[in-house]
Image (cartoon, rainbow, N blue to C red; front, side, top):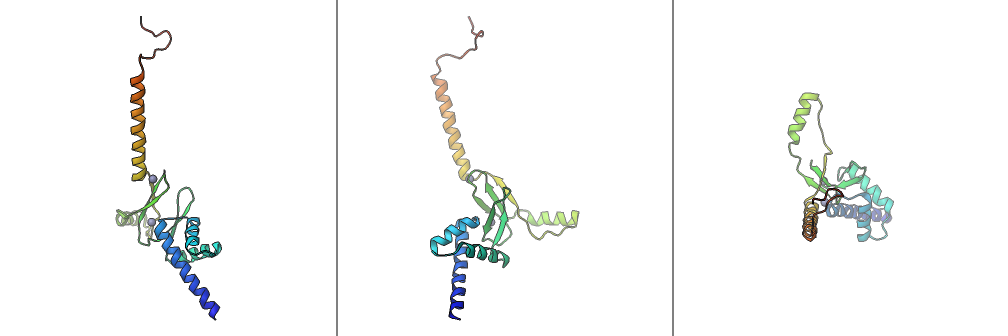
Length: 163
Ligand SMILES: [Zn+2]
Ligand SMILES: [Zn+2]
């Protein structure tokens, strides 16, 4: 009896830590969750973590979704929302489900299909990566200007040299 109670307590603790990790990491993979949990609870079994992850999803305490390239991600935000996934750094951001009700209504009218949920993921480039790219471009432009300034005479192809 004592042992059973101990197991339950351990399970509850594990599940709490799993949820904490998912909140912290924002849309991690099962492997990311495992690394995070084992940091906080050493001696934890990987299979148990995976099993608890699946249970939490089945119970509706977590969401999971698949990206276009087949990566399974976990999410602690249960409200309806869309995702933005950065093609450069792979980070996933939440965004409010803009116009979701309108889309659902149009689909219901035109296709007689009742939408109960969505897994919409937009791909693109996040603000941080855009800034990084802009900085790279600035550097490239500055470099090009520098190269041009160093060119003493224009380059001609053979036979094109003016007299
Ligand atoms: Zn990014
Ligand atoms: Zn999300």
